[in-house]
Image 1: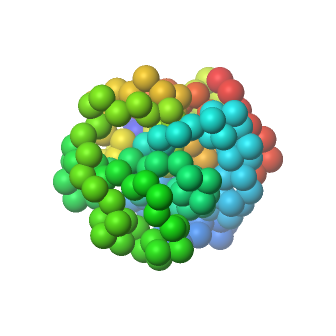
Image 2 (image 1 turned 30 degrees about the horizontal axis):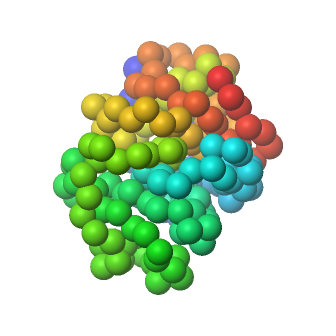
Image 3 (image 1 turned 90 degrees about the vertical axis):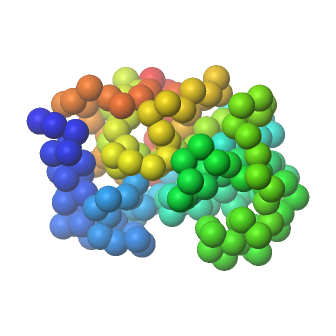
Length: 186
């Protein structure tokens, strides 16, 4: 199996069984899925999320509840620019109700460098993960392969996206995987 075949397997399963939420179809995305909000709530209860002051977060729809809750709790967010790899935006003291759409974040944030930021947690979407912390993304965009951050990486996954062991080499490792039913700490 190749990375592309694995992605297609997951995306097709989510679509065929009506498990994917907006944006649909899930193909080409880190999928938003049925139960994602429960998975997000599980991740929000972790010491890593609760103690984080600065969170680097992807712009995927599946991560929206985590970004909103972080802002509600007074945490700062560092967001990647969707069209300009390597550019980031810092949001502090922003009312999440003002951010109806992801692109509106650029109205309220300021440009920031990734280097030197005291990042406490990294939130990324996923296409597939495994019980050992292996991660496969959508194949482009954030998080870039070069992204090196000392903070823990966390993601959300539908149970069908979680493999005992990925059938391909992982693209990176994650430290926390939240599903609607459980928290996995590889």
